[in-house]
Length: 245
Image (cartoon, rainbow, N blue to C red; front, side, top):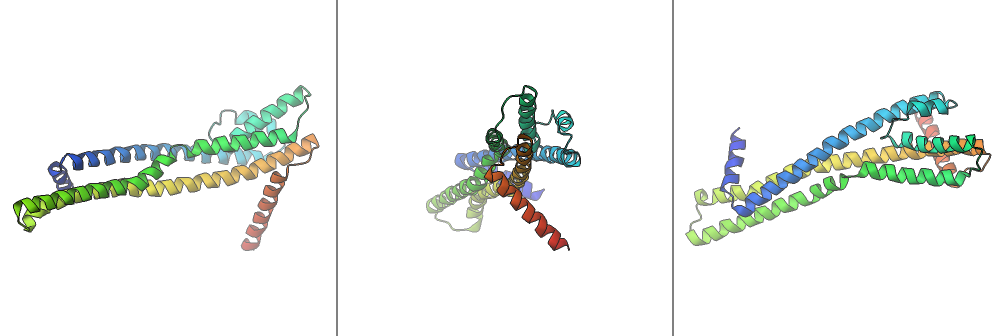
C-alpha cells in the first residue's frame, strides 16, 4: 500500500512531461494487455478446434465428407479452414465431373496457410513494439527528470538529500512504468510467436498429407514440396519412436 502511495505521490510531483510519459506508457500497456487477452482466447480456440479436427480426421480418414460437415463452423484453426476450402472445391468439381489439377490445390493450400498464419500473427507487432519502445520512453522520462533535478540544484545551490530525493523519485517513476509495460509484452510476444510456429508446422504437415490424398484420388504426381514435408514427418516419427524405445 505504501509503495502505491509513493508512486502516486511521485506522479503528482512530476512535471507535465513526466506525467505525459507515464500516462502514455499506461495507455500502451493497457492496449497490450487487451491484445494478450484476445490472443490468449484465440489460440486456445485454435488448439481446441485442431484437437477435435485431428481426432476425427485421423480416426476416420475415409469419411472426409462427414468430417467436412462436422467442422463447417470452424473458422479459427488453419487446418480446419484449409480442409474446408480444399475439400469443398474438390467435391464440387468431382460431382460436376470437371478437370482437376493437383498444382491448383497446392497453390490454394499455400495461399490459405499464408492467410491463416498472417491472421494469427495480427496485432503481435504491437506487443513487440511495446516491448522495445517502452523502456526507452521510460528512460527518456528519467533523463528528463534528472535534468530537472540538476537545474533545480543549480538554482538552489544545495545538494542535500531532502532537496534532491523528490525530484529523483519522480524521475525514476517513468522507468518503473516503462518496465511494467515492457516485461509482460516481451513474455507474451515470444510465447505467442512460438505458438504460431507450432501451428504452422502442424498445418504444413497436414497439408502435405492432404495433397498426397488428392494426388492419389486424381491419379497425379504429388508436388515435390509436399513429398519433402512427408519425408521430414516420417523422419521425425522414426526419431520419436527410437528415443522412446
